[in-house]
Amino acid sequence: MKPRNPVNTFARELRNNSTDTERILWRYLKNSQLEGVKFRRQQPIETYIVDFVCFDKKIVIELDGGQHSENSDYDMHRDACLIANGFTVLRFWNNDITENIEGVFEVIRGRCL
Image (cartoon, rainbow, N blue to C red; front, side, top):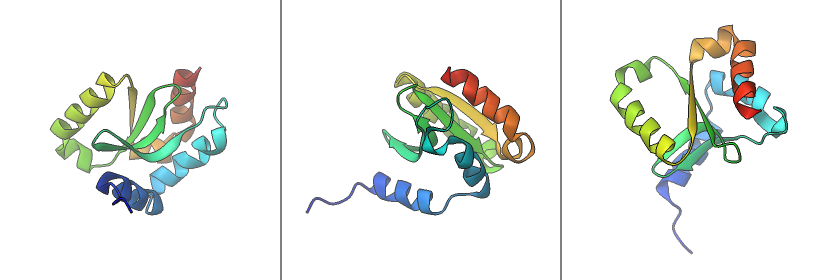
């Protein structure tokens, strides 16, 4: 049997241990609820794992907590890799999800049309 890719294993762990804000947004994105667009969560793209992705529309959604202000170089390289692969990266702070989910949903919806 072929050994499992460590990135895929880690992505599965992240899906099984979602944050509260990821669960909130996932309620809006799952089952192609958003304009019939299919999103996946915690998916590997190259060596990175993105929070949410729509492969058809080439949209990546990242939710950022406080740790991201400390890792801005990492996020910049990650975004550059995703953009080089043709993705649009939408970043939202966790408090945007908890305080303005409808506004976040409309931004995402606008990119899906």
